[in-house]
Image 1 (cartoon, rainbow, N blue to C red):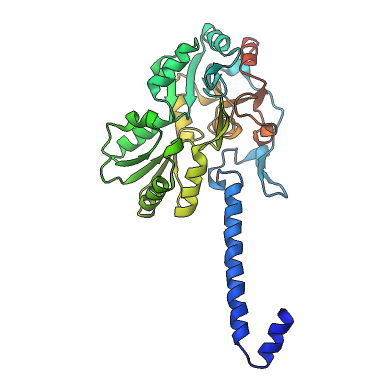
Image 2: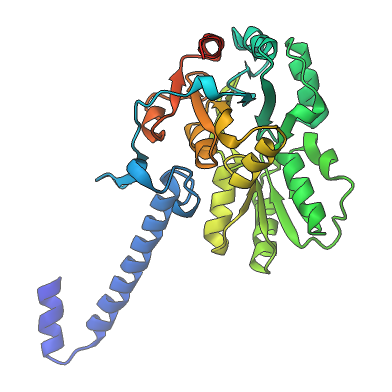
Length: 331
């Protein structure tokens, strides 16, 4: 093809040259499209929102595959310094409608040691009342002031800024936003809305953001696990809108440093005396440690083999929350 094009151009016939030039442009455009799609298939958190420490011996390594990893060290967790424990819910204390073995005893043991407890979740398919009822039903009594949820954080953020949200959220948490003016929305709130995440609803969110409305994400998790297996979480859709609009979402909930700061400020202690226990290596453990907390990953819930490779040095890994009680007792 190249030699034919060269011969024709030497005889002054530019028609085929124009055709081939157009073809090359189309191929280049198609290649750019493929690269963009490939970018969406890589880990969903953009580099600007990576949650691993940015300095010191745990800085990022760029592997030949292009995947960003964080060195995982063997430093031991300072259990003697732990004065508050922050539990993720789904995947740590329960999975679907079943309590994880040892969860009840571990929470009770932590209370017996007079540790301050916080329950920290990005769950966006149950209201605050539903979560409290579910925990109580499992035999894990939790006071309302001990529970920190991403939807409530999003509502407070919107209220403080007097915004009018377009709420693309699960029907179970619409009540959390019912008191807000939602006429002529000037911001977008996107959470784990399940079947509400249709093309029409996402396109409406896209149009609002293109007009300048801020995008507010309820958590930035890639996926979660329930009784039916792994489920795609809101992070994928938030990232898609970020990419399409060329904007950066404001994330309410984990791994937001501001969210972790709010949790820490509710305790009498410094962040270094607080331990975050979760099944998400990025949002729960690395995100918490980025905010100054200690971190512990459990091999339950949505944990996948190899998640340890994304942990910063000093993170602890245990098989389940059951092991946490022994760690605390010996601390």
